[in-house]
Amino acid sequence: MDSLYEVGVGFLLGFTLTAPPGPMNALIASQAVRSFRRGVVTGLGAMSADAILGVVVFVLSTATDLMEFVRPIYVLGCIVMSYFGYRLLVPSPSLAVLPEGAIRTYSSSLLVGVSNPFQILWWFTAGLAFAYVGGWLLFIGLFGAIAVWIVAFPYALSVGTQRSPALGRWVRYGSGVIMIAFAAYFAFLAVV
Image (cartoon, rainbow, N blue to C red):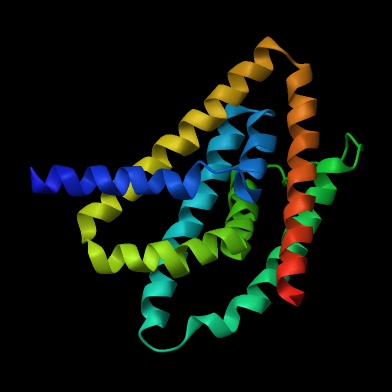
């Protein structure tokens, strides 16, 4: 029963990383309204970024003080979020949000994930504490929650867009505004 409890705790904690509105969910939403598959591939890039960040944070935390990298992380996040926010808001039908093809979609979302200050800081704080508290079963639960989210969230948006095609345009514009707002917020955090 202890094992099931640890997986359950990890599962619940996983939703603290995946469910809150933020740049990555905005990007997943913008792709999910184009197609369910693109939304899931974008989510897989985000999930891979979490795996990379988890490993990096745990390895670096034993060797260096990670807080010295916070300002550069905010600057990088601002640049990446501004770029993708702009691409979402530009009303050119020929300009895709992410490049076509699963590999390019995945790579682009991986770039957003590993440069997303919220994901990075989550791993620096909650993720790091999480590693000290529990073991590998917690991580199974955590990545289980991420897997559920990256399928369920795009599915809901894809179905909603099929029922109301105008929803896709509003999700794309809303996602662009969210990305630009987070870019501004990250710029503010970098200078204060």
